[in-house]
Image (cartoon, rainbow, N blue to C red; front, side, top):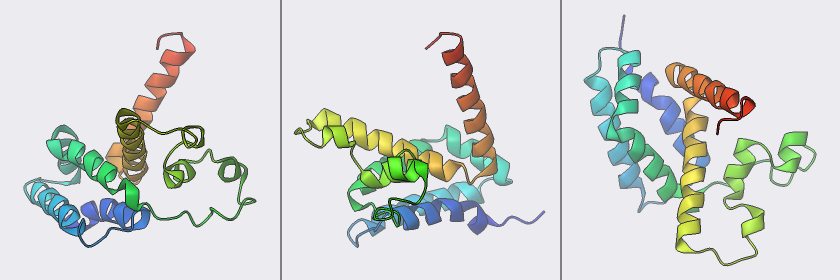
Amino acid sequence: MTRNIDAWLEPRRNAVRQAFQVPQEKQPMVDSYFEKLRQLAESSSDQGDFERRMLSSPLSLEFNQLMADLMPYVRQSPYADNAGHSASTASGNSVNDRLYKGIDTSAANRQPSRQDTKTEMKAAARMVAEEVGWHIPIVRRVLTWLNLWHLLRRWFGKR
């Protein structure tokens, strides 16, 4: 079995490219993260090992922090002006639309505190990380089981 490390890293790179307009001053931070990720991938035996090691390494948290740092540079949604795109897009319920809006509209009328902004950025970074995760088979399975577990807890009244 051949190891195609670029194919392992490409979904994460594409997510950053598609979601953010990374300015020149932030590009070294992004390149540094992907270089660390490449080193982890090169030391892994296969993609499954790479995904497991990444989830348990500090690189997972660093990815979330990277997403939070890049939130001010989110690209405009291609569907922002197309209100009739779909029911979920028109009502703003899709993950992409919430990501592109940045801050919740109910919070837009008040001056957010530093803690509010930090919490919102963490939530947006988590959405991006989940969106990227759905394109990676092992992460997709883990997220599916976690979502099912949370759903069952809500059904039976345990929060």
